[in-house]
Length: 65
Image 1 (tube, rainbow, N blue to C red):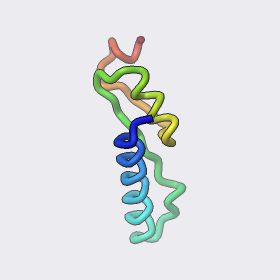
Image 2 (image 1 turned 180 degrees about the vertical axis):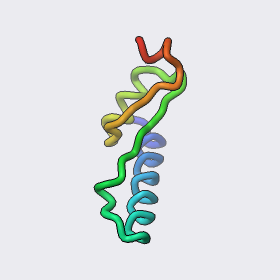
Image 3 (image 1 turned 120 degrees about the vertical axis):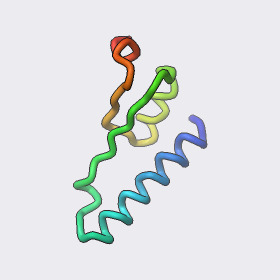
Image 4 (image 1 turned 90 degrees about the horizontal axis):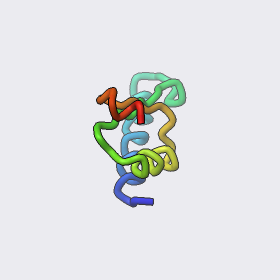
């Protein structure tokens, strides 16, 4: 698994958590929707393995594959 992907996703989740706590929200109520644009299925798998659960694809043709 790419360390860059894991570190990036971890950083985003930390920022979400801090922002939620700062405004009095439960961080677990905030959902991250990751959107891809022409990335390989392997990269998407790495993101899922790193904890991403909601995914969108910005190009319809790519999403069909």
